[in-house]
Image (cartoon, rainbow, N blue to C red; front, side):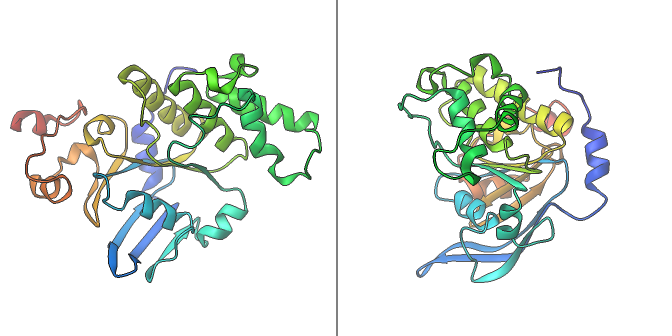
Length: 273
């Protein structure tokens, strides 16, 4: 992967113009009598990396599934590329990596085969890949630096390598928006850092808009353009360098939370700590 360009200011300028890639307007979701999401409102702008952070059970995956159109809110609206989420998905505009899917896959398939599943999903069963299809698979693997591992057994790869292959599978349909649910779960610190650099590369060099879920607010603070702190409600939505109010952190994570900032631009936070 080429060195990640520092295009953050340029991306911020882009995000201030045009319509948002994702628009969540006053969305509420219930499971029976349980109110899981309460009046959620936030946008994700083009060419941004945004992370939804919160503890287990805070509604993060529910919000992702609502944005994907897999869950219908009882109140409010979701628009993706100014269309319904279902329409955006059917047009191949969204690449989605579910939480932990395929990480224990032990079937005798290669990394190439895993990515090829996305390319061949529109084909009739048992119909071989065309030369163009195979080129798309290799192109997707190249974007995540896994082309040299294309023929390796998927189950033999490390956790970080598996995540890269699964992202390649999402990229193989040429999406404009990449949505990931807890993508760094199970990765060690080194693999996490490499993974987050990959996300920045995909934003800067491939022009993707990226939304991902995390429970580790400290780890993502130096990676993302904006953070949405969620615990049934959005308690903060902004740049990590804006310094998240202690009241918002307490509402999301509880009174005993200790937040270590990884954003070198946040001088005020460093003074307060």
